[in-house]
Length: 172
Ligand SMILES: [Zn+2]
Image 1 (tube, helix red, strand yellow):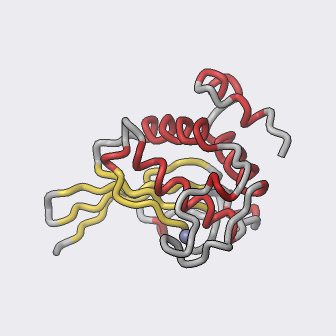
Image 2: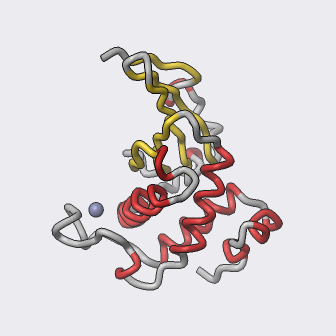
């Protein structure tokens, strides 16, 4: 299998100035046939030295890996959703027919349907059969982290229009 890479790879980006946001990080062509886009969903600006906790990372991984795949617009183009080891964000891999705007909209739809979390029961797959560490989760701080990330993607006006105005009014 031959793998080619273009655009800009993670290690070529200046992490000193990287802000929270959504970035196209790499394009991989697999078997000279399938173009896969790797998106950087950066939750925490790297220079803030305030990574997510393991509980938040695990909770968001469960929710997004499941709910983004169910999204009517981009779900069938999703390859994978994985946490970054540095805990400042996640990698979303999609086929090349998905735009940043479509991902942003899909995130708003998932946010609207899933957040704020009220209890462990809201976190899909968090059990001993489907997960390696079901005790690792957080409710309040995940609600906070997710609203904070959405504020990086949506202005207050855009959030109102997308039906997620609560990201600016949340009490967490
Ligand atoms: Zn798990």
